Image (cartoon, rainbow, N blue to C red):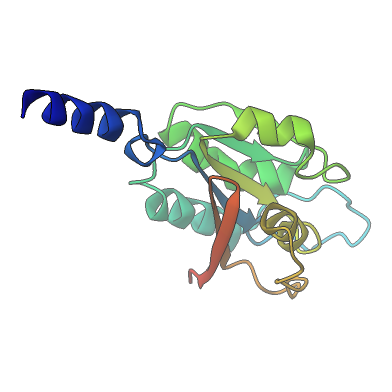
Length: 165
């Protein structure tokens, strides 16, 4: 009986099913509302509504234990990320929107929970790249409320799209 129990214990504790799966979770959002006063300004800051939305994001993410916060190198994305990053005592790391979900990014973020702040024409693309499929279309220019959550468990991605108003 003891040998059988020992054998069962060895089989159970060495089974891959007993080890936790690697889980990577990405939260993708578009920057909050920007100033639209100067049409020639390629790097506008957030307007009052956008500053309020960045605080809403901080509240929405208050119970999420982020390992990293990424943003493009634009005022509006960094300002959107700032409230959440500050609340988590995390720096804002920059990513190149022309090189989204690269092998390097995947290695750096593997097994982590990550916030990624982008733009109407990049956030959905980044989420799609993490999913490995073209599931989400471009975000309407007046929509700053989408939250794409992509979870990758043992290299198998799944996602959900929420609207946070």
